[in-house]
Amino acid sequence: MRLIFAGTPPFAAAALEALADAGHDIVCVLTQPDRPAGRGMKLTPSAVKAAAQARGLPVAQPASLKSPEAQAELAALQPDVMVVAAYGLILPQAVLDIPRRGCLNIHASLLPRWRGAAPIQRALLAGDVQTGITIMQMDAGLDTGAMLTKTVVPIRETDTAGSLHDALAAAGAQAIVAALSGLDGLTPERQDAALATYAAKLGKEEAQLDWTQPAATLARAVRAYNPVPGAWTLLDGAPLKIWAAEATAGAGLPGTVLRADAEGLVVAAGDGALALREIQPAGSKRMPAAAFLAGRPLAPGSRLGS
Image (cartoon, rainbow, N blue to C red; front, side, top):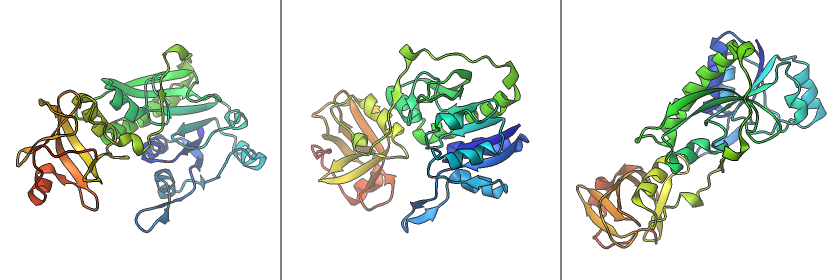
């Protein structure tokens, strides 16, 4: 099938690789412009651009698809389908109308649950036991198009946003290949808007732990914000990132250190306590909580969050 592919991060790169392996004619790869990254803030190509260039696929990086010139260039490619995965640009209706068989989106949730920018993290924060991939027909709305296929992916109690992302990327790659293979036999299903939930974009501020929340809620937050933006709290006024933690028994004023020894660092929450397993002080590397305590003892009764 003659395809235009639009995507940017590693989640999308997995799908591009799978479509190329399946033998589709990918006539253009659209991706975001190179962005500064790393300590040197060097301009760095997206994961999709890197994957496309490795295969010799043509790449375009328009800042917008709203101009008649950009739209004319895409129309001249005469695609059968445009496949979109975490592209990062809004597709105007004129672009949606270009492919002969429409635009298909690979969305990392079981729509209509978790429409929007951060479905993986929101599913973890909510304590969902499963998520998945929806292949949907794109329309002008935000993840509101008709659904073609769904693939369920269970959420394990140990999953972080990073591990769940990888599982969903693999599932999405398989799902889009299967959907295109059987496109003629798929029946679009309208979403029930009454069941929709919104996965708002993540911000660093919300990743600051609120110790008045139950320990189980805080443990989910640590998993959901790993690797980005990273759950954090304050210790003596400086940020302390928390990369791994689990709910445990304990009681005390929220944010109070209940135990700090070779067996771990346990902090009181609004209900129960949070055992911190891996942390990262400001200006340091990630380390086990016990290693941190070996160099900086904390007395029970010390406070986090201020």
